[in-house]
Amino acid sequence: MKRPDISFELFPPTTANGFDNLGRAVERLKGFDPKYYSVTYGAGGSGQQKSNELISKLSEDSDLTLAAHITLAGASRQEIRDTVKSWQERGIKRLVALRGDGAVPGEAFVPHPDGFQDSVELIAALRELGDFEIAVAAYPDPHPDSRSLADDLEFLKRKQDAGATTAITQFFFEADSYFSFVDAARKAGITIPIIPGILPINNIAQIKRFADRCGATIPDWVSKAFEGLEDSAETSAAVAVSLCLDLCRELIEGGVDAFHFYTLNRSPLTEAVCRLLALQTEQKEAA
Ligand SMILES: Cc1cc2nc3c(=O)[nH]c(=O)nc-3n(C[C@H](O)[C@H](O)[C@H](O)COP(=O)(O)OP(=O)(O)OC[C@H]3O[C@@H](n4cnc5c(N)ncnc54)[C@H](O)[C@@H]3O)c2cc1C
Image (cartoon, rainbow, N blue to C red; front, top):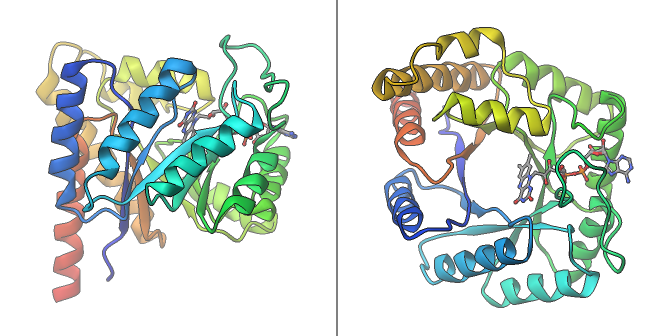
């Protein structure tokens, strides 16, 4: 049994302490031989600058393969092309192409007046810039801006046809959500790999806020598993690892061979899950 491919998502920290956490996470996670580390793209001017700074810093380490996220939010076409060209010069060959969100949460997304209109236009332009691996987002629970699962899938198909080479899902907590989404995607003509996005639950209150914003479902039983653990960090971490490991194992049993971990720049939970998955795979290989 082949060990699943693994990638880790990082975001640009805003404090010195945050940078220390990120540095530790990158070092600890190197041992799992990740296919790449992806760096999210900030929502606004200073956030985007921080993403660029982090990409510059990490690209100095030749041991790391990076994927740079890019959104079309708040930028002209030319600004986006210039940013991506600067990454190309740093040797970046992987992108995660996204629309992004508007400045005001909950309000309809409005593109920049000189910008790409949607992620399909962005992907097509990136495809013209170079021979990138281009990942895009996919939503097992439909995105809040979609009218239906069918519309969401039709749009994902358009992203594929524009040049996306992989999809990474938004986080989910039940393997069936992923499998039924992949089934529906295949029926809709989507053939690119759909890599499950795995979020170990470091802080359930924070994850509920994320879920509210992106339309992801947190099953009641998952919420209940963390009830009363607000002041019990160790028990909460044990529950998080157990849930995440069960989910990954179920996905592997169903044929999944790659995971993208949303690390939130903290390694312990992701590391615990990856260690156990790696050992389990080695044992199966040896048997
Ligand atoms: C793996 C992953 C990584 C992410 N990284 C970042 C990041 O680095 N920075 C950041 O700011 N955000 C990031 N996000 C969040 C993302 O920007 C938001 O979810 C955003 O609201 C949608 O971006 P998208 O590329 O998924 O949108 P899209 O897929 O372009 O649109 C979302 C949905 O809206 C509908 N839609 C949009 N445009 C059209 C259209 N023209 N016609 C018909 N339907 C349409 C479709 O149903 C579509 O599925 C990430 C999300 C994921 C899953």
